Image (cartoon, rainbow, N blue to C red):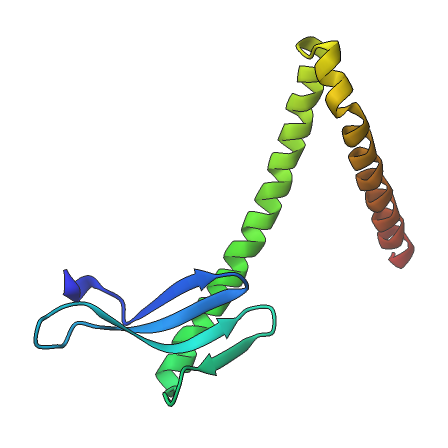
Length: 133
């Protein structure tokens, strides 16, 4: 099993990750994780842990992970938006066909305000894009 393990392990956390070296070359043949850095994606920072000096290979692996992670998060963002469109459609169908008056009373104002806010932002952003053309 240890031969298949990657050299680095990234423990994902808000805005980045903690970076560990995966060590299986010890007497007990146990998997040990030695923390070598902390990554902050928002700031683009890589901070070595303690007295550890990051090697060129370490930095290259961490930067590659950062690039892959940012792409994954961007893909998830747009997927979440597509899901929101689906939720709006199912909410519309629910409101039209199954919702009781009491249920509609509970959510109507919140939905109307959220949709108004969203529409305002979308119209303004679209106008900005059209003006740039």
